[in-house]
Image 1: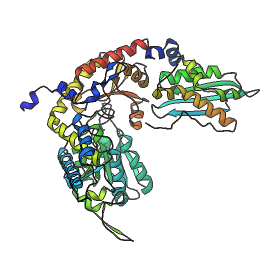
Image 2 (image 1 turned 45 degrees about the vertical axis):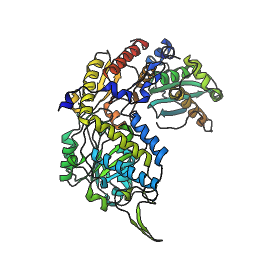
Image 3 (image 1 turned 90 degrees about the horizontal axis):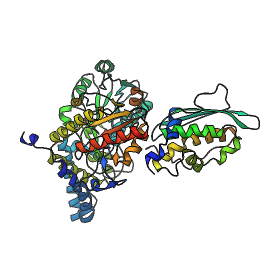
Image 4 (image 1 turned 90 degrees about the vertical axis):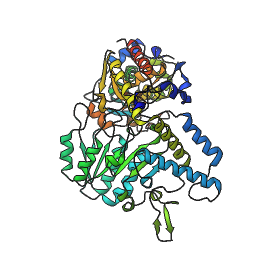
Length: 140
Length: 413
């Protein structure tokens, strides 16, 4: 797919005007990760509400349009959902959010950084550990 | 002098590089990631094939014909590589590359000579390979690191360097050329004043040897390191030039075959340099390939290579500055730079830019370039980097410029 298809107007809009960008004053979950390949960073904070739902979620970060837009879109999708929902979020969900059928191996890590942070934070809160099969931990 | 006025034969050179014939996304490959690694001419590829097809054998051991031919080719390569940088062959150690070189010095020299409370002086423009080994050494020895900062034009701050040397540091480790900014440091002067303060000097020449005439004797450093794959040679081979008086004082790096003279049950004695630092079966094929790369560059002439890159650098600075939103990092004066341009384009992240350029067949580097302290100093998380070599032409820079304009359109700028 061509870059004109990847960088659609909506992605650029989320990159330049990210929704749910910022910090929460009170939060139950705070997770952070980086993509060592490009130095993309995402930090997410979540306040857990009644029924173990994601009551509030905000993120901060810096990096490419793909990493920042996907993190922002994911926070929108996650808000109000039960924590359990986070477990079934997949690579396919993220690609659908971005409107990209596929991304190359170098860029898919950018797209999935937000998901990785969300899962790391929520799994940790629920007392388990997120094993990232997409993450080769390569430091290229 | 006649050679200098002849035009640089880029078209002819391009014929020597098979990879430049390939297409990327249906476009001509415009390879501008030379500071990361360079492409290989047919002559280097042939040298590898020739070794494996005709005389593959271990060196310094076997008495048979193949063994003698391999040993002769390996040692001849060492002599040519040493001559290329003005070093003595006995003081030129073959190893994996610049990273292994700094690690060799850390162990073989640092373990013996660095003591608690010593200062190791580095600079803010170092590659991680000239920072992390010294951090590890300092931690083990209880030594401290001191970093020389930069002026706003991307050159080392001479006042800070002078200050740091007042502490009589044990080591000054500095890059000859910055892999991000392209800045050429006056390493001869730095080594001269460092020596007066009693310091041992390590120069990272990974970005210098491929692009400039280099003479380690004139520079006067104790250690000078460089990588083969950044100068047309194979990956996995590089060299460390060591000053003569240190060769016998240093301890071995790794223990094993070839680096020993005699082995008893309780102790061993060491082979002479450079073999003392080359344990085990060495990287024979790639050393021979590096020799072929050095022959190729010698035939071109390093003065001419430098002039060619200087021309490209001037053209690129003029051409790319015309793109709206183009922000360049480092010195504007090209005379003090190698052919490396680090930049950003408006609010486009370098990774997005590299993706868009890749579609045009243009390969650039994007990211932190293994120089995070420098990125922090620049106040950016990442930059894009275009770097030139012997097969690049002004056409390549025009394609890059067109790619930047396309990126602006895609990002609705």
